[in-house]
Image (cartoon, rainbow, N blue to C red; front, side):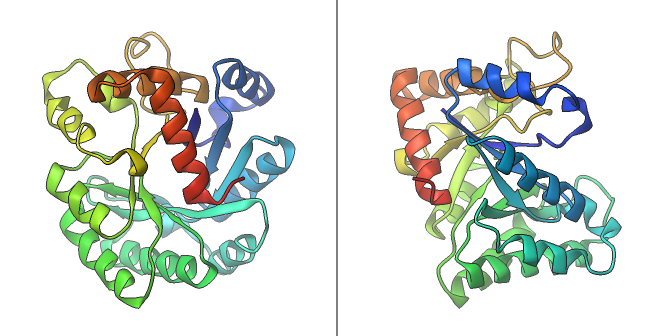
Length: 259
């Protein structure tokens, strides 16, 4: 399996990263995308990619962190994107759930990420929370400039939004929400059944979104738990966990250009 989204630089992993990565390996995880949320966080993801051969880096400024970006931070992201250990830009996108960053500033940074990704031929890792109507026009604008590669991470939208993103060439990644037993997640599980095999990805969004049945029992998610989400996705799609693991890993390697 390939965990396509983990915040390994989070302080909740401090002092434990060796053990966390070892547990992931024992669980069958062959790759982890460590995702940055700020210039400092992005530098740390690159250090982790240099430390662990099965960890890869995404660098970017997350929409809820954009208001805290200092002078020169964007230039630091652009410089980090040149490093061979960096396989994606992000986490970037739009968020109307939280009010940490003015929305026009979120849009400004999202457009910057999209343009840089197309200039460098890198995929983008896209965050979208309650902002689908705002995100789609910007994705269409980017697609009008040239090929667009990327993933909607921790997908939480509806089937129509998923279909439009797929039509633009993007991948769809699911996290622990698809495992939750609450009925309000049934529409999300329905969407998960519709994603084409070759566009499906799986993630933990560690340390967030602990999957069922560990939710409520463990305070922190970690890459080894991607097995639980992958197994639930396999059940929803009527395939074996081994088949889904092989397919989503191949998809991740293709999207992020990893041999």
